[in-house]
Amino acid sequence: MSEFFFSSFSRVTRPLLKLTKKHFSSLGFEKVSEEFIPEWKSNAVLFRHRKTGAEVMSVSNNDENKVFGIVFRTPPKDSTGIAHILEHSVLCGSRKYPLKEPFVVMKGSLHTYLNASTYADRTCYKVASTNTKDFYNLVDVYLDAVFFPRCVEDFQTFQQEGWHFELNDSSEDITYKGVVFNEMKGVYSQPDRILYRASQRASF
Ligand SMILES: [Zn+2]
Image (tube, rainbow, N blue to C red; front, side, top):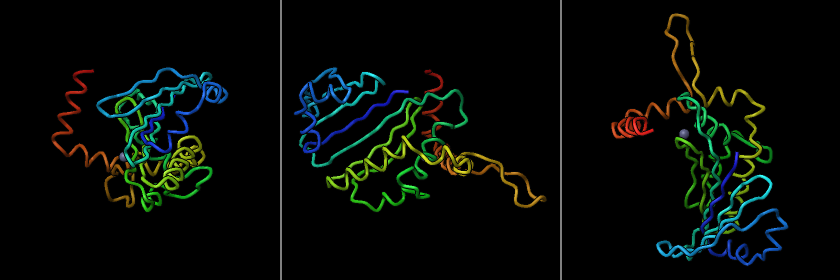
């Protein structure tokens, strides 16, 4: 699985742009391309890690926000919701941040944007802040979450986030429960989302 970083900020990437070929080469990266994007008034540099194929894109402009995103290809085999369940589970504590809900704690930071999204073929974790220290703290939490998630050792995380059967009283009917299941129940009660899904299925 190859990953893709995306950043859009000025002060933070400037040192990266000043990197000489020798510098990024010693980190195992090669520069793929560099171009100025007039519509965004941004300079974009794309690097690729030689060994893993991981791509890092650095975008610098005058926005006071420092933005970070890490994206994984997560094409699912079926509609059980595995990629979305995994996105949630990954944010339930990591090696360095063994909290139950680090994402909730991050919401108390100085961030200007904080979210994770699962699309039809990829999962993105993205964060923005105008405060440099806060920004690097948030990036660290996200990176530790995606590379060292606690959920791989705690099956109960998947049971909590994923869909599962629940029966509290034998006289009642068995029901479906789960964090992601409930979220998607809300999503698919919106007519525009049902239309979007139907047109996407028809197209692909
Ligand atoms: Zn979700």
